[in-house]
Each structure stands twice: as C-alpha cells, then as structure tokens.
Image (cartoon, rainbow, N blue to C red; front, side, top):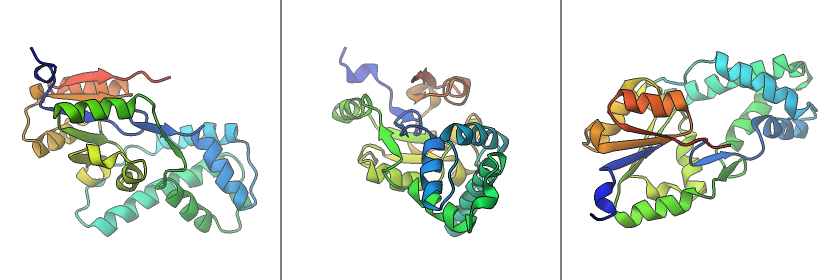
Length: 218
C-alpha cells in the first residue's frame, strides 16, 4: 500500500497554535506596542487581563456578506478585547489616543513580526504537497489571516481557507466543518482535521465524522 493511499482526501489544519504561534506572548507584544505610545505596563499583567477579556468576548463569528462590514466587525470585536485588557490592567487612561494605538496594534498582527512558524510545519506541508494531498485551513480567526499566511510564506500550500468571521460559525460548531468540507466536495469520513484545541479541533472534528488529531504543543 502506498503512502498516499493511507492519507485522506483532504487535511484541514487550524491556524494559530497549530501552524504558527505568537512570539513570546500576547502580553509582551501588547506591552511593546503600548510603550511606543508612552504607556508602560508589565507583560504579565497584560497576559492575565487579555486572557480574561478574550474568554469573555465569545466567538468571532459574523458571516456578513459585505467584506467591508465584516472587517469593521472584526476590528470592533478586537477593539473591545483590547480596551477591556488595558482597562483591567489599570492603564487605559494613560493613553493620549487609544484609538490610534489600537489601529497600530491591530495592523501589527497582520504582519509577520508577531508570529513564528513552528519548525515541524513546513516539512509536513511539503510532504503532503509532494503526495498530492489537498490542504485547507479551518480557523476561528479573522480576515487578517490571509495577509499572515502570505507574509509567512504558507498561503501557497492551501487550497481553501475557512474562517469563522466569514462563515458565521466558529469551531466547535459543526456548521463550520460542513462549509469547509463542501469546498472540497468531501464527506467527513474522507477528511482529517488537525489542531491544538482538544474541544474545538479534536472533539469537534470527531463529532461530525472526521478524523480529529489533537496537536498538543507546549
């Protein structure tokens, strides 16, 4: 039996935490950009407050058919998280213009600077490409993902990108998996999904009949 015959018709992968991750921590990056605006706050403080704010924000699933409207929703969703993060850290009032700061911070995460591609990713993508396995991304991210994939030289590997803010459903909702599968005209039994979240990736994929693979990164 050939190696290709053992592989599925399509492999879906999560993005953040699976293909690439934040350099250092979100708190470190927030603190670094804040310092450019004259606000000094420990990264550890921001990590704690960001974690609380992110969990409280719910899932980013909008599904607006208008691209400009959707991008505005994405921006405002993250603005609320950042505002709560710095408010809980007790430094929000130190910003002369928080809107200007956030615009810079938001754009920063669309570049390569805050991200690092995990060392096992490119060898795996190259192998699957060589074997002719179609790949797709299935992520609870926003439309900045397209720019990030390009700048990290990952975009060329993926035949499809399915993100929660565009389709109006976020993992572990089975609808987002169904939409991704439709793009490849593939049944769940013929697909794998690989991700770093036990609930949103592994369990959710198995629940819809796909093979779920939990990538337990440290």
